[in-house]
Image 1 (cartoon, each protein chain N blue to C red):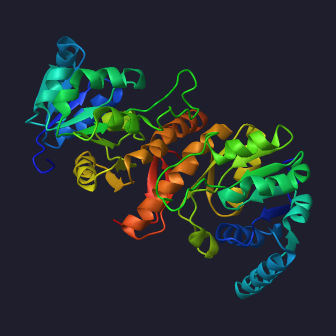
Image 2 (cartoon, rainbow over the protein chains, first blue to last red; image 1 turned 90 degrees about the vertical axis):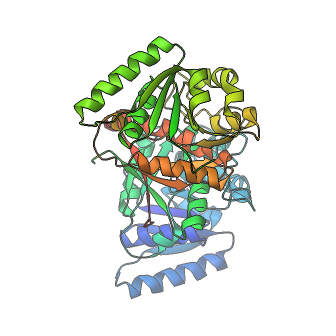
Length: 225
Length: 225
């Protein structure tokens, strides 16, 4: 299921992070489906994305707007970028479409208003919750929680790495390829349980952003790839 | 309590990380107390440290070996670098000596044998557990969990950052000064609850070390200091 990824469906693809990922992957030549709760919002986002790609000189931009369910059906791989409070309801609505696919879970379990404070959910992490909910039919791989949407949306080079967690190596490998296509280094970071570390780190980065007025990310040091 | 730090006591100072920190701080000119469960082990470690400093051309190396209790008494600031399974028993034995001091908690709640898998304790994190146990009389600041002991022990420049968590800014600030004295950048990373992120990240780094045969660390990107 990993060597035929041509179409990437992004559920919640109109949000900040979804928009950033869509831009990177369209630019890398993938067919990207923007999924949203309504067809109308998806269409608006797709139109904007097409216009931006034209501005950036990308001649062939392959983008399709769909509602989340149709998007999940259409994707060879599916990316979930909705707020934590909508994670399970969104997965419920598309569950059967995810069978035998990889779901990239980008959910961060922030608890407003204290989003700079680590407050992991029962169940350990959003990634683990998704894997438990979807069962063995779907490989959940968690990634991209520590990437600033701001930087993804811009066209410039990215100065951060992506930690990729999931129970199956072949699924992590497929996601690492997409990380690289988006312009970053991706690292095998262990089983889906380890998503807890990466999700928690997002609150630390939010704290650092506020404290130092920046858009911080993390890099893995001490390794040459 | 933060501007008079001359003596740093390291409980569990004979372990890998304690040894590395001791070397860095002695070299930076601090008076370092090596604490251990027995005076004898502390003396052996202090002798080795003195010899190494001489090798490295450090003419004034101020090191004292003590048992953990005497060390905690002697330190202006106290560092805990024992295994998680000994964290609370060690703190119990020195609790009253920590009043009105900062405790730097370096404990990582690894659960052998699966140390590459994130398994956070009830209570959220080792740092939070220490703060709860010691109460308001002691400021617990968590730091150094993501630094490879191997790199600390060597004399060369360090390519990693330190995330510093604690409920009081002035206490974090004092620890950030010691991070810098040890040759790294330190960042305000939020309240002690956020130690969960940093402690969990250690398991991710262990996974990366095994996968990529390295001594990985993390760097914060997207920020100029």
